[in-house]
Length: 102
Length: 443
Image (cartoon, rainbow over all chains, first blue to last red):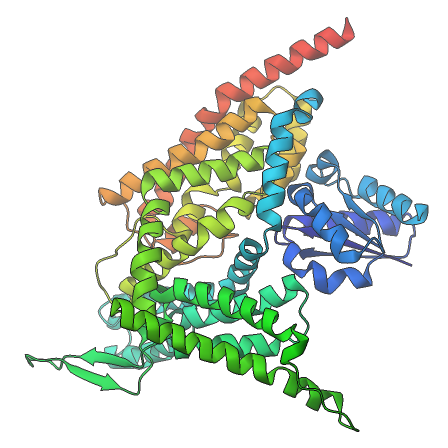
């Protein structure tokens, strides 16, 4: 069971990616919970997550987010092409790889 | 592209964005405005219903008894009172909350109450009233004037919200100001005592500061802030040149992959919202509309299909592009684009780090906003008077935002069509450069 949190400016555009990632997870029969929030809601959400993925448009938040989670979970910026092309599978694979690395 | 994305300019942009995006007060402002947005949209919706549909002198007045319509309007008016007319209080409370969250301060309710209390402390609870036909005006006491709690006083809400919360968090983290009680006392009781002294000091400081300012400048706190801070800043940010420059800088940031809200959120939005609310109130009261540039004006004419009016880029690609990958991506991004979400095309095509597409991405909104500005100024379309959600699809958004003016919807179509030809030459050059690169690679 993995929990993946996506963060973008308003949690709007990222929600498209969330749907695609869920589909990919279902096809791979992986048990994951994926959800998207705005950067303002990061503080209330990261504790439930195994990894935080930042949309490329909020990549500047990386150091702030790292400070907030105190290096307890990985924080990654989603590759901008994967993000724009809503490549749910690639983002999911990279996220799972990052979680398992720890 | 890859070499460009690693250049020093990009690093500069990222560094500035990190500073701005991470700066706690600017962040707090941005988050707070996002929190109160639903109330503003509700107010816009109600204004639309009250002034267009339920208007007794309008078309409904011929179907339903005008007196009945006036009664129904009063429901909407009470909603306006609870949203638009207390916007300054809402923003102050939202700032207190987000400041606590961003500072990691746990006892959120105390600063919220302190801010609400201080807001009233610095507000004069009197207003002047001139009865019809009377030569002299009366001073009415025991009222909270709407002019102080509505958008007009918004900067007071921002200043008090930020200052009072900061002060409170500072005071309450000082261990010397906490009451130490020994014995078997429940933690909740101790907690209530521990905020007691900071609350008292905080409110008293604001009361004295407000009193002193009044004495020194013979102006109340609200009027002072409004005339010294709000008016000049608003003049700079919401005049056409200032507005275009800030919007363009924000879009340029987006061209480097950093969300435009980092810039426009704290610098532009407070003033645009204030103008928006002035307009909504004027529209509801059948007065002359004061501002052309406001929040929904920007969304309606410069965020069609998303930032940069990218709906026009999609159209340009569909009609004129020879690249299959561009067409495929455009097909995929048409759904989000219908709701003005442009991140998929910005990052997917990509526009980011691609100078040939960044240029029209910045130019298109400048063109669109200028055209819409003069169209409004010349009276070709009605002023934008209603806050619509930014996700309202283009053409519908123009109709709704102007209180039901079809000419604004038509203008949106014209702007979209014209903007296609702003994107087109750059798209062609981009495709040629790309083809040349491909040819080089295959050599």
